[in-house]
Length: 630
Ligand code: ADP
Image 1 (cartoon, rainbow, N blue to C red):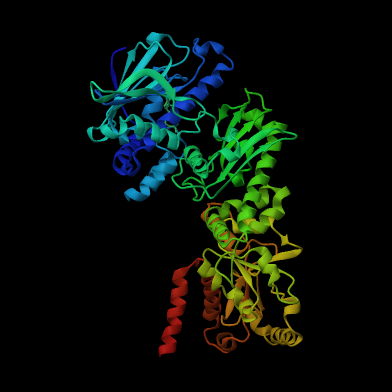
Image 2 (image 1 turned 180 degrees about the horizontal axis):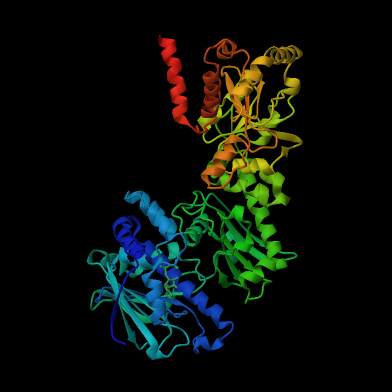
């Protein structure tokens, strides 16, 4: 095959530009990425060889070797893993196959520091070589192919790359970095490289080998020997005993598997014995990934069986509301040829899933309920990042519903955040029977919701729910510790024992006296309101809208609309405040019809709704302004 030239996919070009311009602050990570790719390639070979031992080609000992050539100024990362065919080299090194790549590129801001963090999460992998190299040559041969079916891939990492056929006796891949002049001294130094490997790649389960160097007095320089030695510990981190692992090693391992540049919030590492035998090492990240809401996103756990890597992103191992958790499961029971389909049905996997869910929840409980304020603060920050996802669990994981509900935190009329349902219940007023909640698009809208006025006046706490999933949450979470959750935007207010007899009597009288007014209003608002009634819930506002007990709230109807879904067409009830000056004057006004519609429109605006006919509203208000200023 002659040399052919190919163009990088547009996203790769963009990524390469960022790699060379934004990632220079922590250059050495390129080695971690390339060693990790080499180790993945060996994992893949081991996995494919389960069905086809011939792939080992009489060289069953897998390892990664780092070679330094000071004269040529090259650094080579060599593995004897699965290798690549010509087509694979073109596909894998010229395009990015990851789902959500376009989305990710769209999130980049142009601010190099922020982008550098984001790219870290995304994982630059192979392309990180261009942080230190101005040309990369890859020589590879896929296991099982003939020696003359090798491939050489080469590129300066700008617009395009070249590919040609070569003969390569040994299977696997050489990544040859032609170092930039200014990087050469640092990254050709034997001890420096050993240091980087110890720092980032100690836990890689394969041996990473380097040639020894010895001082040559004649040449007065270090000279590379033929002898190789193993630089890393070469035992998979999770198989080591907890007491042999330093906190730094746990953090490094997390960074490696998650591509996160920040340390995780917490981890748990256990060997589980019993019905199903497995090791779990689970991490809760500190920051939400850019694709937390990507619905195609799979789980964050890697599955191993008896130390053999089986698959990334094994979503069957955790429920989807815990998709932010990263880590490793190493099972002793599963068959090595397990597929995603088998995983879905396996009883062992079910046991692992339950076990992991419990572990993650207790990890979160430990933070949330800790005596230590620093830990509780960590939980607060976790909640900020992942709370909305955890809420999905209420519909998804019936068995852990109560534990989940205890972990939830809300804003309320008493505190801007961090209110647990237990806090709320402990502060309930004497005679209060329900947990009151209001949903809105924003905290400010929720706080100022007219529906809250009476609750504020009486000092009754109301939870302010402003996440998009909250409406959905309410449809699954009906009670907590025997106390029903009651939306203040639905049905007539019944404060029950919180209202004294005198107040109740006053309200009944007002309703009786205002009957004729209510009928007139109903006639004016025929097409808009399902009913009009007097309320005690308002203090300062003249009117508000409420949904029927079984109807969707105005807030939910708006969310559905935004999501392009049909909202059931139910008209709200207009409630009026008999004590308000405007309401008192209404009956005798010449502009009754306009005022009735304005009351309705304002009530809609106050709860964050949109007017169907804004021009008509403006016209009515202006007509009144003219009479008022006359
Ligand atoms: P990622 O590893 O996240 O998939 P990379 O950009 O690091 O992304 O690598 C892209 C692909 O190139 C890999 O998925 C793999 O298929 C292939 N690849 C990279 N390095 C090697 C290697 N040393 N041996 C075999 N294949 C490799």
